[in-house]
Image (tube, rainbow, N blue to C red; front, side):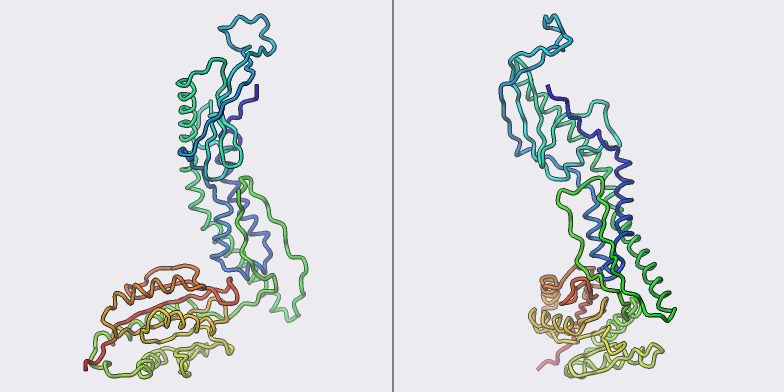
Length: 412
């Protein structure tokens, strides 16, 4: 007779939870510094959140199958049988019924004892993505076997439900834990770079990139892949601050609302004149600032902020011309944007009657673009915010606002 395999009894949940958090922060602390700096924070958070989350299994009861075979049963412990020597096994012919129960989730979770448990946990074998429950006996009856199987499955599901509640608390914290550790490490790395740079000596090339990562106690069935990134020395790049970006978007929003509220003043102007109104407003706010960031009107590149000869903000003003024109405009922004965290905007003027249809088309078009990464949210009813990747490097991200406005059209 095989030794019973008790489920939910190897690791204590509290220890597992502490271990997952510790291993997550340890891996971040041991990650190659330049790789960390050269990788999108959100992409790293995605990776660590997926790697260290505990995916509690779900039983797939509709796919349960049964089998049976003859076996030898040790009945030495049966007090109702007349057995002279109970100090050793006494075998009799019997039957073994084997129930295979498929599941989805982490097989290792069946080893974790949740915060609520009994002194007699359920017994089953874990094989890859299935549980195997066995019932043995010399005179098995169908009702007896079914009752025991149902009882075992019920106990397993209760344990899983408790463990699922435990895991939710951990899983909900992982992204914030990862982000905090990443940002703290980035701050330290950048501070160290600044310190060494201020000494006035050339930086030494380092060949000893850390390659070792600690394996978590609760292993993944399929481990996520860390985002690819360069380990070349990281060079901080000029970026537009979030406050400045939001202020620019606010100026554009206010100007567009003036147009919507004063239709007679704008119904006859052409596209070039329309752009000029925005440039006048923006130059009034930003030209001559100490940072040297100025807006310039250069052909069809409508609104620019340049630092060290590089564009860090670009705004494109377009009349609505359908989904393809919007996609082409985004491609245009991607060609112009070569710096990390470049912040851009597409300002769309609609002179069609079905503005609601235009907004629906915008949402559908942007999210199928090959460089789309995620939708941040609606800033207003007609202002949408996205994260896009640079066309040449998935780790270089672009903050994109798509703003749409109804502009009056002169009636014939």
